[in-house]
Amino acid sequence: MAEKVVLAYSGGLDTSVLIKWLQEKYNADVITVTVDVGQQENLKEIEEKAKTLKVLKHYSIDAKHEFATNYVFSAIKANALYEEKYPVSTALSRPLIASKMVEIAKEEGAVAVAHGCTGKGNDQVRFDVSISSLAPNLKIIAPVREVGLTRDEEIKYAKANGIQIPTSTNPYSIDQNLWGRSIECGPLEHPDQEPPEDAFEWTVSPEKAPSTPEYVTIKFKGGVPVAINEESLNPVTLIETLNKTAGKHGVGRIDHIEDRLVGIKSREVYECPAATVLLEAHKDLEKMVLTRHEATFKQQIDTQWTLLAYIGLWMDPLREDLEAFIDETQERVDGEVQVKLYKGGLRVVGRSSPMSLYDLNLATYEIQTTFNQSFSKGFIELWGLQTKTFNALKKKTSEWKSTEASKVV
Image (cartoon, rainbow, N blue to C red):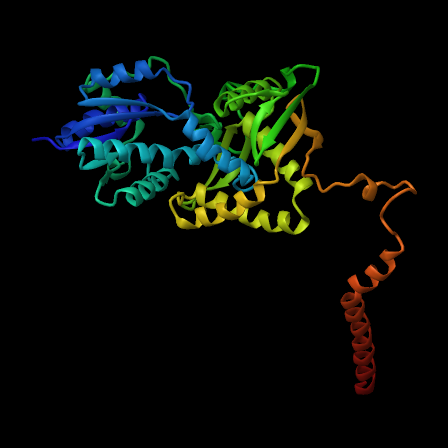
């Protein structure tokens, strides 16, 4: 009797080839799983394609709301930007997809799960660590990594096995979800060249963006966005709306050199309109409601949280430990932030909060202020005391060395 293997299935060439590969090489009954995290694909067509390849069963799982509330919102609270650039959009989806695969594997009595990750990327780590953490007894099969299948070999194999392949070739490798669109391969592998315009879908060229700026007001409650321009929206709709609005103005294009976990430096191009706006707005609101000490310390926590998400350690207990601190700080992150979108640019132009530490009576430069300026003289004396003491000693030591040097001469 054939054993069951659960395959993460996208409907593309790679994972379609893997269905036949698993059926032939492992004599497996393949169960395919497609997890909808907002990739904007026709799930019905994907299901039909899986069935034509004679899978035992196919699952289509709508996880957009779960992805937004349990993963994306956590990233917003943590101001998650890997290497100060990448909003970890692809990285965030992997542990969720892995958890759904494990659920199906347990339900179906499967002995293994499979994915189409290569041995050069980060995703293999994210999937493998998440799966093995949730179900250590499940075998993990990664044929692309284990056999080293090239794209040409996949196409040849597909044709030999009657697997439908696209008639038009796309030079790019695309991964997308609610939080962002990742574009790799082809001309993008040459970091000295500007990305071709055909690489982008979610954002217009800044040169072709509207000549009139657009103002957007985002309301936050407990550190997460809840409304746009005073209209309350569910998490998925809110992110989708901002993706379209910001993308229309050319906001959210990211192009940088990224350090992959496996040691490779890679040129990465992303489109993350909503993420770019929400992270900037959230960070700005935090500055208004957190003390300097909280904000400074939280930067370290945010960096570590983001690193865990990126390097595939979502299941590590340290993430939950860090989130305990992060969530505590977010209780006061309530308010509204107004951003200005124009020609690829994003700028926060206003913010307000019932929890604001900004006090006009203290901050104003007018004479009528509650800030007692006479206190500053004594504060400055104590603030710079050690610095002044050090420099006095430095001068004294320098003079002593000069004297001793003249004696030697």
